[in-house]
Image (cartoon, rainbow, N blue to C red; front, side, top):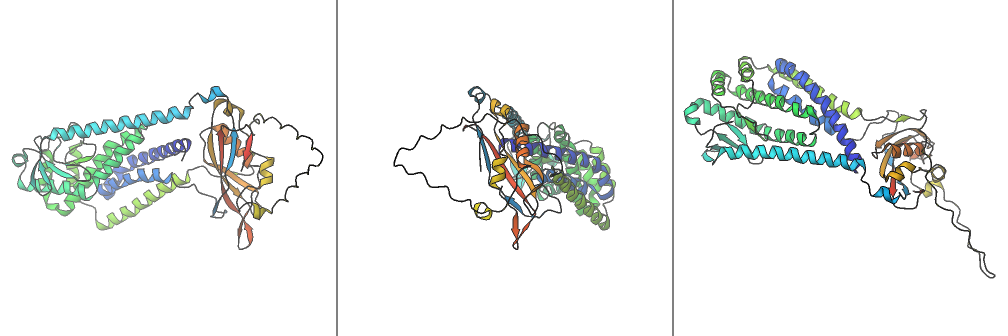
Length: 444
């Protein structure tokens, strides 16, 4: 994937995640009230699923054959002016800004993580998987991902009763069993990659709050008689001034009032839980499908193709061959052209139509020193004629994309053969605009 394709995928994932976050924020309270806290927390899975769906290949019309043929790449080479090659393209600065922002975000979260761990002081083991810190702020908590440790405050014996300590341990063990540390690590990674999207940062706090409510529900499902003791232990917890980026606090988020109110509500029945799981499956699958289907569709062949850019300056005509001296033998005639099915595999561009309509390197792109690869998805009928086309992966430059579309709209392809008969299909055509060769050269 070239830089332009990476930037396009980043923008598509950011848009999909924004829509998913807004949807979850709108539904989380309704889901919690109707089906419980655990299902409301599980709805956050829609955000990474929507992002991943944008990376899948785009859809195709139902009338088209499922198979996609890969055409032989088309190369368009031109020589830019020397002054233009010294300038860095705008895409370079965009990707540089994105990378710097991601590194700054990663450094910020790493600093917070180390600051919290240093604040714990020396840890002393006080049981299987349990450690006691020298401080108390933000504890109890689960610290670490690969080797998670349950860390208790220094005064846990004085602050909590034996029953309350047992409930604290169950709470943190529920975090570990549910893989909440990995979920928090993914959330931090997404905040670093999509640092420019304010919705990703806005969603972090309600996500962690729903995580705690879901963990409370898992503990109370096994100890419903301990609601009062559980709430009293929650009130005795000292909140952290800053949440642990990769970890799980016992009482990390406000409002505690809402968490205590949740303790008074009855757990959802089995029938309601099953209904909620079915609705969640519909929400996740429907959201992922919507993100995948929102990618650009094939353009209809009836839509006029964009005008071709002005042709680039052609190379000077070669000098005529010198006259033959007496006794010289003329060269043999060129061999007859091969049949289409012998010359190129099915799905490839017919050589004659490509030579008549080669992609023209835009003159402005040559002057600016712009290069890139356009990947087109072309729908062809059983005669190889173009029925629709779209950009599967952009070069990152509108001039190059328009030049590729204008040329491909006039091409004829070798149709696919199934059971001895030509059939309609789709062809993925890479068209590379490169700098450094003789201007105006186009070859396949």
